[in-house]
Length: 262
Image: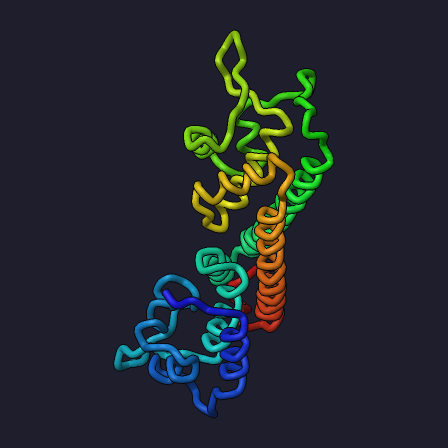
């Protein structure tokens, strides 16, 4: 499927707003030309649910209306801000008249971004805390520990991923003597958060080891650059997400979905 940037979406926005002629309906080729897409892409957008179903003429050809033009405009902005699958889920919910699902999906997208931002900030704080800790200090034995399921939930990954990262040498949890269960203290949770964040941006394991080694000896430059770069990317994504939510609000409020939503 095509990759759409917010700039592409907004340019397409203006095109689709003003190039609809004085016609009762559009053929697939007309809508494709207006949007700068192929006819097959338009049919795919309708088939998967980005567009509401089109009526058919006596000759069996699809007839697209201004409502379809608006749906396509909004869909492309949503793809840029929410990602393909999230945008598709939202548009399907809109066209199936399920506003509660629309609200849930939009809220989940913003919540996910907020969670990523919080994790980045924790990682930056962990970096600074490591630098402030005396080199000879040892982890306190009375600090609270968590087991693997809770550790995994803390950073938003599966326990199987945490086990795999341990096998790769990125984590060194303690073991409970009586059960053999893995135990993660604040230091290991900090490492786990850094690993998860760097894996999110496709860092290789050898690069992650290098970052962790530098962090352990008080050289945070590489991890700080990585986290700040990740935060900047997240800021751009958040901006696109705001634009997507605004477009969706306008779509729902405009009456284009009247009769399909409740």
